[in-house]
Image (cartoon, rainbow, N blue to C red; front, top):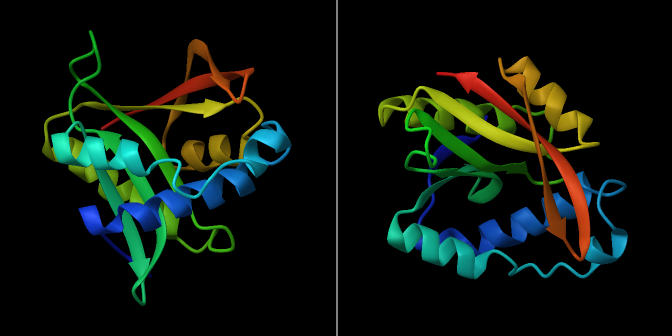
Length: 167
């Protein structure tokens, strides 16, 4: 079973690479192949550096044998007009390492951290078509919300649904 810890600045490059590999695997058939194929490994380096440095979010990593197996990113503060909510913006496991407890370990540590900082709900969004993620979050006590949204990725618009869990 992997250990879970807070990410450090020297983890950022590997976390970004892990996120890119996970996106290319998890979203194949959901997002445009050209967008995924063109995604660089360093896509999230600047975002992660800035967020960790300013403390606007927290990143947890799961590792085993010195290798990062997964990463989770959460907003450390409340969301807009919902002061009791924290947002899980990312939770990804390295391709080939799914269904081994990495995602569950990351999620549990993330939810504990959110409770520890006084949040009452965890909010996240899941792209339409990503039924693996929906099943994973349902299995961990999340519920679908009525609200849906859309995002632009690679010039195309994609719908997503919100899920939440009371902490």
